[in-house]
Image (cartoon, rainbow, N blue to C red; front, side, top):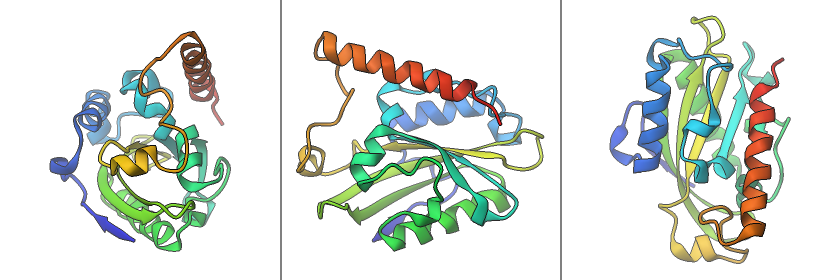
Length: 195
């Protein structure tokens, strides 16, 4: 697996990830003034919601779990990781990279973007850019990480790949619109759920 990128490296961000970063900054994210209750998923480009995840962060990183795991991430990784540790991702190199990046974000208390290249569970080489945005419930410690992934940098063969086209990238008819609305409603329910 290859991983490139670093904290505060805006150059590799796609235009849509720059929008998500700008929204987080407008909420006071740079000073950890943005908390879980304030963050509105519907303010980031909606076609990125299926590749968005939320990690609950605990003092012991081994307790970190995915609160939310976007539907497209299941297609990329071959399983739903909701309620599971980010450090159980496959391939193992990706899990180690996630742990390292999470530790850096917790230590530096700032956002991070990384381009990941790895072999998907289906055997297809995959590439995406992940933007990680820390949230704080107390303004001091990081309580959540919102991870927004943009797969637009992936090889078109990967995006078509061995599975159906990416969902929700265009509303193609009433059935797709219905699924999109149901998905957005589930996002709203999840964002309203608080521990």
